Image (cartoon, rainbow, N blue to C red; front, side, top):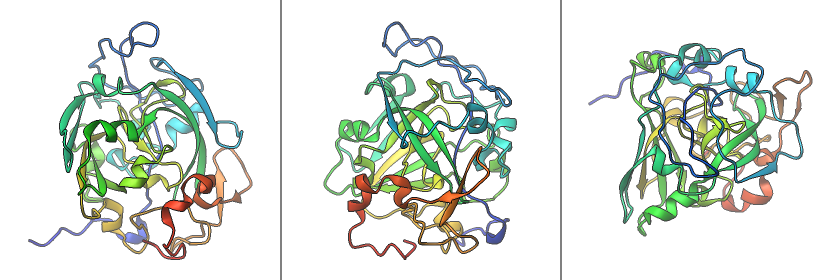
Length: 318
């Protein structure tokens, strides 16, 4: 059967991911216990607020991993982002997320694992202590932010489910629900949104499962209730509102690589020497700054991740 053709032409496409959405973890228990009842209320957008809002989450430790840069203000992080499930304009997620519900929520783990399972969000967030990590975030469109994410290493979940020897890649799938995510009514990309990582990328300590932002419950516009953050990759590699992780043997076909294979490769590593077909990647504009700055290889995390790609030509879009 022939695959449908997207209504939006490649030249009109903007990509990626970055943030906001409001939710309610109803009181996460006392002193570090992450249990408690989670609200099943609609996620209300808090666009326009200057100060972090929403339920506070317990933080086991804070780790500065953005070269000492000041985090981008909450208002910018939560009102300027790509989340095509809510629309293609960067203001759409914050404006259109009001009817989205993030409770109840579960995450299915499937494929080449010895322990497939369906994890309720309440159980998932108890797998490891929540850390706040301040990461640089770089969009393929050449803008960037510094974001204080709250979550834990994806490796903690991977170890729990015990991948088989055939598991070489992870495939992430986001929620498919056009009634709640109005952007899915338009065939901008092939829904549901699908992304993937190689196993060693998933196991890298920098790769996070994120449930919060600025110490608060992750807002809807930013991919609540759970998303993936890989700081050395362009933002489109970080799927939001994920409902399924599948362990597979073959490299998966991912949403943006299917739509525009000459623009979005599977790896999506931040690379100032490899231009996007429609713009340079050598410079970037940090949100809140007027002047552009040099883009750092691997977004500044080369020391931790460059070795993963030994033998790959950095001038090639993989």
